[in-house]
Length: 228
Image 1 (tube, rainbow, N blue to C red):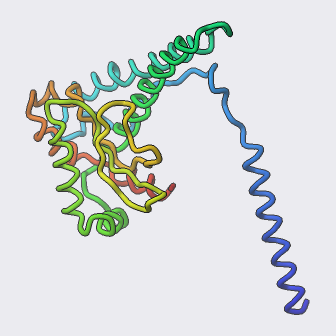
Image 2 (cartoon, rainbow, N blue to C red; image 1 turned 60 degrees about the horizontal axis):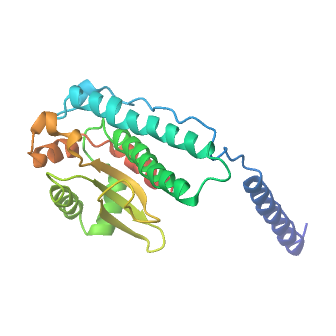
Image 3 (tube, one colour; image 1 turned 30 degrees about the vertical axis):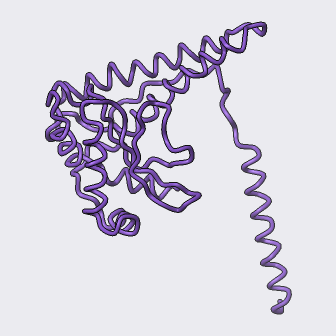
């Protein structure tokens, strides 16, 4: 095989790979939008091992707030699926708003619990990413912690997000379950609703934030980054 034949053969192989990839995307099975039942995801760590966040808080948070959001989402979607065709758009719109709140609550809680259970020490890979974004790990940490403190006594979420369109990292506030950056990809999520810390610290949100930082599972955060 001469050089020209080799190039043509290589081009054919590459084209076939692209076609196969496109075909694979086109045949990807999509679940029904309504009709599935969302499951409550179990904790992936032992709540007894956390430092500064009690098992009582974690279990209550998971079994009541998170599980409640999952159950509510299932109920709302069942109601949407059961709406008669002659239902007024306002009826659907009201359910859609509640669906968004319940769905985001479910998803954010799952991200939150999954990025707990670690030793709080970032590995070199994620440190390098944070240095690129914020100048230093300490600068990112100061920004993240101060953002969390701004919500003390209130409610909401603090999310380290990657914005693909801007190729930038941002520590953002989600003031509710329906107010996040539109295309932001969450890397680290901290719940700042009082149910996350009040039983342990009362109104002293800053102490909870310190405890959260000491229990971050940076391997999970790194895995989220690698999957972008």
